[in-house]
Length: 318
Ligand SMILES: [Zn+2]
Image (cartoon, rainbow, N blue to C red; front, side, top):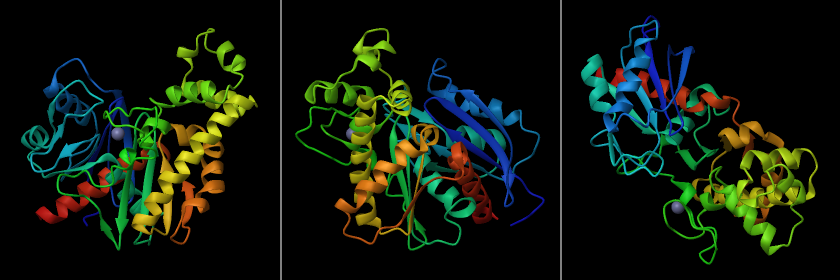
């Protein structure tokens, strides 16, 4: 690794695009913008290029951690439910513009790599990562190997089935997936179902959402739980119980020493997220329980992974 060389890191999300650059010592300047959803599929790479121009550095390689599903062979995003485009080219426009090697990973695969090199997973060969955000995803390193899969979409744990008879339909169209309970975009629906089925008193949640149950938000539920509203606390406890099942499934499959949790829901509500997972996970484990914590890299886990990817991509090309 050359200490005088820099590498660009891109975190391409449905809501935000973030770019940075750095080297083996870590990330430097970071820039965040709302993801351009208006300029067509090519607009996504154009936006990344414009943001990279703003960085005060030259790069030997670029690493991208992207929303999925991705198709590694062509370096594209395919049929993502989170952006209104069928096929989004990523690798080709970046490598054409910069004439440097470009690496791409699913964002959660990038995140677990970032965790291993810069975060809580330093020195570990077996670790897993989960993001609890607008969507829900995961990444895993097993025996030192980052799990990537044939197209780049290994460890899509948000689409593990929790209950095939569930009344909740996932964004992918299937019934009872983990994401249908616990992602930011689905929590309000799960909350309304719980309020109905358990006949919970939602007067406090209603008062904070303009008197309309349809307007209850994920943020509002966690805020109310933090303020002591028993209904919101029950909802948060149930979300945590489902998270415990999902993470236990990951532990039983990958046998990690460490599981870190990131994503805005976890980062904004660390205790409310972690406590019910830690309390309930043993009920679902066959494998020895690993350490479970909120990622110390905060919102920069994917960016750190993209940096590691860029450094490794450059090394391979040398
Ligand atoms: Zn699904």
